[in-house]
Image (cartoon, rainbow, N blue to C red; front, side, top):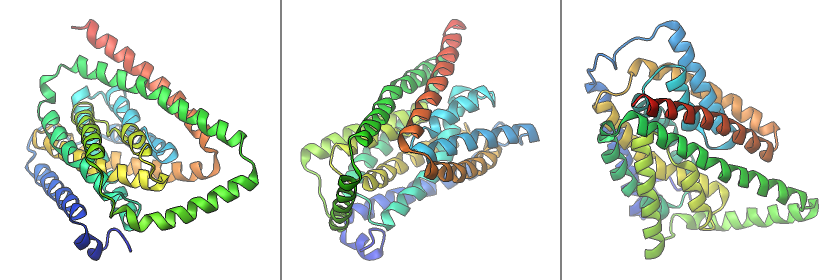
Length: 329
């Protein structure tokens, strides 16, 4: 049974509520775009600016398709450093660009049944509220503190990604071909048995509280710093024992509503240069396609090693920008 089918939605009220909430956020997103009348938001970029925006989008899309994380961590420094945007404007633009792609990803995984509806709902609903409130009040936080917070977040992701790369490499060294075949066969059977039950699982009160706490933190990060919190949500869901495909699908479903809520708030307040969105989106799509083809040919541990190096460079640039902003105080 496909988790995105009408029958599944009728059987699972939590899924229906999540879809309706996402639809409301998408509608609010569209209304905010139509009402945005800020002269800044309606500026038309010149050709060099459009090319720079497309390049930033391509790098961000390539990073997320290669290793699954890092789109906003690459996009925001590109928007501030290459496009000359303020931290708040870059945050708003990043949230707006990422919201649509994450929603499509969530719907795709849902159609294939790789979605824990209960966990996604517990993560998404408080995240929507937190993202909307934090985005609304983000302008009250000085730009220098937004830069400091972003730098700390980037540097904090490096050990987690490096540890994942090391664990995958170590596991590969100690696994022979026969055991790998047996494990993959058992995992496939387990996933086939588990997939129809994912939408039926109801989290316990303790699990729901943990999901809500992580969702709230993710929403705050989305509204203030423009990051989706994908590493945080994926690490949290991995501890629940879900298959990796279900972890990806559930994390996308959990992040889509907060991103839409944050994007709608930023658009309503006129913080997004609308003319910059098309080249960013086109570049991100092209980068995603190229990155997916590259990822299919390279080992996972190498890709994660590259991400560690990229995050190190981005983190260093973010620290330098934060230090310069603090000195200008």
